[in-house]
Length: 354
Ligand code: PLP
Ligand code: COI
Image (cartoon, rainbow, N blue to C red; front, side, top):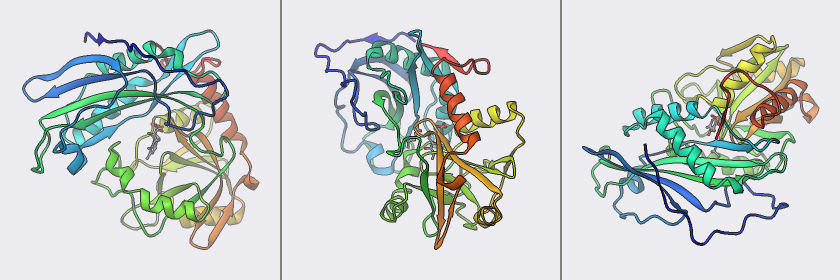
């Protein structure tokens, strides 16, 4: 793939060093765009100044939501290298989502090349303060102007970049999680395991409810029995119960997180027994009552490793690790961020130089 480059003539001022970089609110100077048309395939890959894109009001994405996105981060290592964390897994997951929502896939090498090239051009935007990074948001939208319900015949693949601080205002302080009993996010056979925008629209109502009750995120229950915990709005969930690491098994309605996979691999490397299985909310509250629920944390690109301090379901509330950060949670945070920043050597192939 040969990427055409049109550099901006009016670069924006970089954020000040003390800017808290609220998640996803500041965008860099450039974006990557590539078109697709049936019969022609993907064409005209280009990096151009970040700017509004002209769209037909009839574009299919506006009506039936044929859209997917990914999330990854670029980090500036102490030695000046720019590092990505397992980007080929994002390319693969994007293609898996493409298959599910009937979009054309993108060769993994082209996907990663587009990310690297854009990050290289906007490298000055990678923030350096601890806990900050350059968030990368690739997405694909259906652009054919037509109102029939069917897959679009044309698409745009776009990548934008945003220097970010912590996703949760709490930072590494434990967050409070609300187990949602009324609304569901996804059902098996639906879109839950795909990274489609539609899943996030489905989550908004319960998220508002949780916020109003003073909770930062929703922990979803399975859509059928409403008994088993699945994942949080923007992260997968882990529990340490009697020394063992437990996370909900990927059942079709849970996003297969890359941080989840990496976290399981680290825990196994450190000798923990890791179980992927169904886990009911009732089991969690019982374990908490017995003192067996030792730690709870979420994993995600934006969320990194987020300790959970409280879980609430209806009128039941449990406090975990005394509302503090458990030792395994802290070890995972330190090691994962250490690997991502190039300070710790991780398993082979986990970091890629831009
Ligand atoms: N679950 C949901 C719903 C998400 O949006 C995310 C974020 O990408 C995750 C889990 C974590 O996935 P990853 O670790 O690949 O970022
Ligand atoms: C990410 O962690 O990259 C995500 O996509 C979560 C997002 C909803 C902010």
